[in-house]
Image 1 (tube, rainbow, N blue to C red):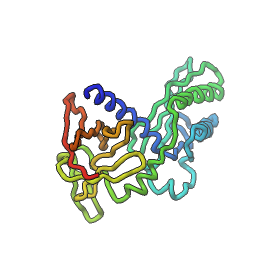
Image 2: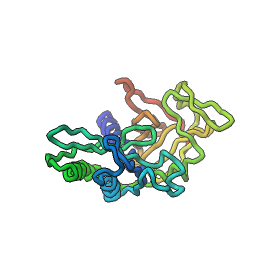
Image 3: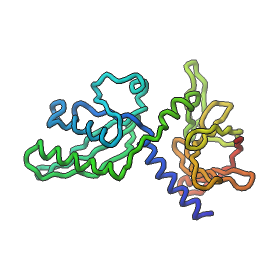
Image 4: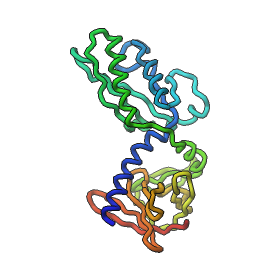
Amino acid sequence: MKKLFFTMLFLATSLCFSQSVNDYKYAIVPSKFEFFKDKDQYRLNTLTKLLMEKYGFVTYFDTDILPSEVAESNCNKVYVELKNTGNLLKTKLVVVLKDCKNQVLFTSLEGISKEKEYLVAYTQALREAFTSFDKLEYKYSGMQNVKTEEVSNYKMITKDATLKIQENGIMIVESDLEFQNLLVAETIKLGYLLIDPKTSTIVLKLYKTSNDNVFIANSNTINGVVIRKGQEIFFEYYQDKNFISKKLNVSF
């Protein structure tokens, strides 16, 4: 069982990484990178947009008039940044994808060029940096649709958080994350949402595995596995190097 747990915990971490990118259909490319004076200098912004589209993202410049489905939320797209890590001898570029909270979702390897002509050097370095996207194997999962269509009536409860009701809805404030309440399992495309019906919050997201009794599970900040042991269900994870197993009261 320990071997199974470690395997599933590794998969949980990997899944959270891959889905953090695959959950996004849209990408925003700046019309001017910070290390340049002019917009689309050396046509680098245009090339970045084309390469993002090549790897499957529906991509817009930050100056474009966006369709309503793209503009309705800052958090339904990735934001593309380019880091200039070069020196006088070499041009080096790194592509970074971030979410609306400025959290890094993906960082490419350095693209390097020794060409002296800037137009050629930046183009070569950018194309080389984007070869990292081959290993990323991006494929839109459709989870943005799940979030908007199936989870629109719920909010995700975070680690060490409870709820207070305000006039404008629900606000997260600090307290303990509890699992004692009866949780209702709502089916989604990849598994289940475990909902606390008293507060209409998502306590955990469960993702199916090849074992019907094991689910990869995460809240906003805790990654682990949910395991069905006979008639009982447990959420197991590591926190501060301590193994924690919490019994869940779930209605499937």
